Length: 428
Ligand code: UD1
Image (cartoon, rainbow, N blue to C red; front, side, top):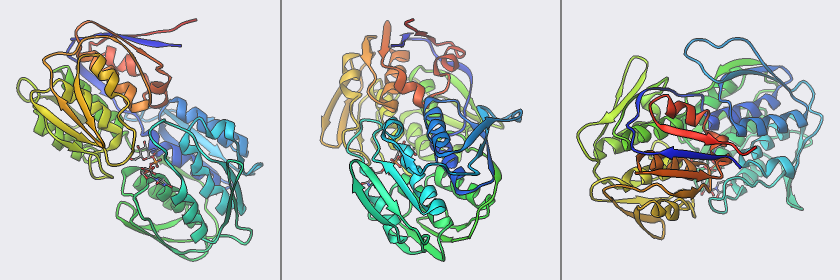
């Protein structure tokens, strides 16, 4: 299995291009199942999770081709997705278990074909992560659902009907699944306590380009007036705010000075504000965001993860690596997922001083981290170990980096181009 070797202590300087958001691209790709016409997506990141979803969509009957040149400020690739005929409404365990976001085919298949059979998902090992909100929402839209042998079996032979759906807790995936399903339902659907993440807004914008009638995306109340048919469209994926935040922290932890090209401040405002409190500046430039420390050592600050516009859970592990090297103490509280502190023992092996009490981790900053062999456990945990390695004295080897390839495009190349001593060790 590939490893990443880092020799720490080099400040990052230069620029890093931010790609399209994985978490926006995935639902956008599943939206292609809603129409028999072509959906063209630009700025799609080149990542293992995207390939996993491509395999699933092809299995449902979609054709996916890479198209045309990108414009100068776009990266990744452009995909043309066409689901003229849906040949299977089953999303099998073999494919779904690789990535939890596969459950997003449920809404589109059910709305377009009147049936769907979707394996219960696997994905990152960060807590139990149920899909009850997706299932209850589809039932509200009139679907009959049974859970049988590990599959969600959904039927709506006469189509879905609009309804009011009040989410008891904020869920990004359930909001996305229901947005897509309600777009082809009969009548009006109102989603209350909907997720407000930028990826939801991106999906709604694209669905509206496809002929949907959605208003209020980005607010906690979204209104969808169902239409009979959706058509093809072209859409460019929003920049990745988690990749942006990760490199903000990579620059900060090494005491570097980096411009993140294509990054948008509004997508990371809460993160930038927290970092400001810790002594890191993130300033908007004409082409993105420039990040550097404002003066000397970092200061510990408290952070609590929350749904957008709060501090994202997907940056919690990276923030913890950063706070490990700050002066003073920092309390990091995880409110979205249980069991999302699996990076803690690994960071401690590198000399960090962290104690977990329930959903909070008390991080006492140390003067320096030490390189060590460490093990990645999930996508964001693995990148936190890379950040720690960039700042540590000596050599760090990160094992199980297939997690990183799920969500970070050319990570080691981007960091090496800014002066990091980092390389991938491939075993033949
Ligand atoms: C998405 C992101 C993920 C991010 C998360 C929270 C994608 C592909 N993934 O995941 O990177 O960490 O948002 O920002 O976009 N829950 C239930 N029942 C459900 C659904 C969710 O109880 O039916 C709970 C979850 O266990 C969790 C919380 O709700 O505690 C939030 O999960 P959710 O927002 O749904 O996360 P995902 O959409 O899976």
